[in-house]
Length: 172
Image (tube, rainbow, N blue to C red):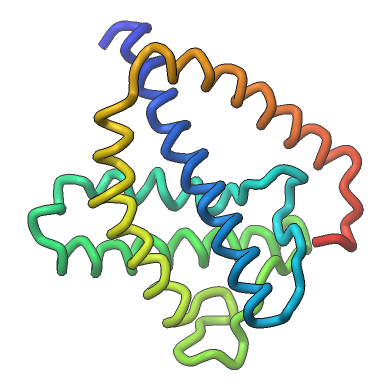
């Protein structure tokens, strides 16, 4: 694989990451508005994206070959999203001393980091990703989109730097 193909693949997965991160942000804003009555930026960054959802979307996109078997895709999605959520939650607590979410008290939770509701919700999201979003990306992904991705990567990088340098830890 040549350098141009590698860069193209990275940009393709960044697009999936970005759409997953933005979708996750929208999901959480709506979810917490409905459940808590609060409109808030629930993320660790200033921008409208949650990197954990983007990372999950990239991992879930690798399940594309399972599309012919929706049950296997759904079960694999539960496992992947559960692992991603547990590992990121564990790291955030044990390395950064931040508890970004807490499922304690919810049905079938593991250390408050993963619960049945979350993995089922994310597995449904995986079905939407693999059956709707990725086919749209595959159909319309081209040089014009790649050009804009460089700009979005710069904005995303600036958001990460700004959030690290100036984010009030109490706003998490």
